[in-house]
Image (tube, rainbow over all chains, first blue to last red):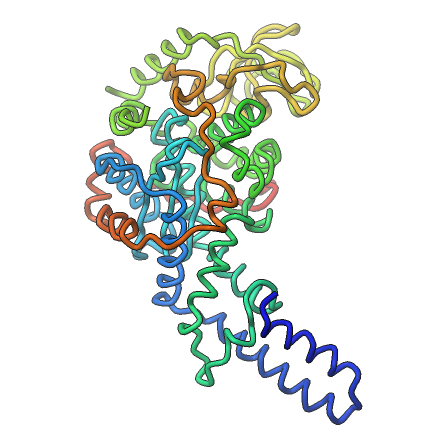
Amino acid sequence: MKPRALIVAAAIVAVAALPAAAFDLNINKLLDVVGKATQLREVGEAEEYEIGAGVSSNLLGASPLVNDPRVQKYVNAVGRWVALQTERPDLAWHFGVLDTYSVNAFATPGGYVFVTKGLVMRLNNEAELAGVLAHEIAHVVQKHHLKAIQKNAMTGIGVDVATMFADKRGRYTSQIDQVTSFGTELLARGLDRGDEFEADRMAVVIATRAGYNPYGLPAVLQMLEALKTADSNQTALLFKTHPAPRDRLDALELAMAPALDRYADQAVLDARFVQATGSLR
Amino acid sequence: MNRCTAWILALALAAGAAWAADTATLVKDSELKAEPFADAKTLAELPRNASVEVVKRQGAWVQVKGDRGQGWVRLLALRYGSGPAASGSSGSEAGGLFSFLGGRPRPSSPTVATGVRGLSEEDLRNTRPNPRELDRMRANAVPAADARKFADAAKLHPTDVKYLAEGGSR
């Protein structure tokens, strides 16, 4: 815990021991902090984008991009097409393949989406890639990370609320570093399980809207389930931050049938995928 | 290449792969259907945990072979690989459903991966910003108009589909 947070915690303890009048006074102050925190609910797109850029820059510090413009362009084309089928088609979407053998995918606020080389090289076709990207895109559409950051600010764990909202005009952009730092922490910590299941349910629909076979993501989850015992080195972070593939498949099975059956003969596009990503293997 | 040819090719490739004879487990009691349709004739009732041999996949259905004969079950009723209690029984990456979705034979594990430590929790906690790499990422962005052309080239047509309710709609 940072010093300021400690002071706030100490203040709360002190408040509890004070007589009623003083308590009222201090509770007003505390409510004021909460009031400012709720202002964060109205994060504009510009701020969201700035937070996302900061977290993405940190992620890229941990793993650079695969140095192959052709692969990067291909994944951007698939991702942008898939993102166009969502409620946020005009966001400045960016997609990147990280140069690591780890099997994982990430999203940050503002439309930055990452997938690792280790995952892409284990996929078989564009429908599977679309399913993975659609899952990450769903996190951005639902602002899952942004909401987790806000929730965290409200409870004061991790981000120092006192300094975060020190600006009297209610601006928090000067505290962007702290928000960015917690956003990066979230990549290591993971989202709520409910957010992951929701992203799965949305992903199969988004990929289907884009013209792909709805079973791309389930196919990837089947692969991950089989991989779980085989290659723990490269999957540790993924499995720490996500529900077990088996549970995700169970949830999808309940949600998907029979609504998406009629789309089960939509495109998988293996030839285009293999051609575009062949350099990774 | 039309869709039909693609499927035939995919299935042929899958059949040629080393893991052709996949086994899978049913995660719930399932009807073994004569054809890959919900209203097709039911050949048998397969119990949960029944082990079946996977023949091929078609749409949302998988053709399987077992004690009760050959037929079709729902794709998501199957789980591949080793279950939690039976870890190690399947050493390699099981082919499973994904070998049917794409059917491209490939090495069972990446050639260079062994012993390489990947992107870890610690890497994320100890990272420093890399703005140069972020600029590179931005430079790769594909405009919406180009993405539409890219989709068009593969005959990907947008469809109107509603989001799914948790646990399904019925």
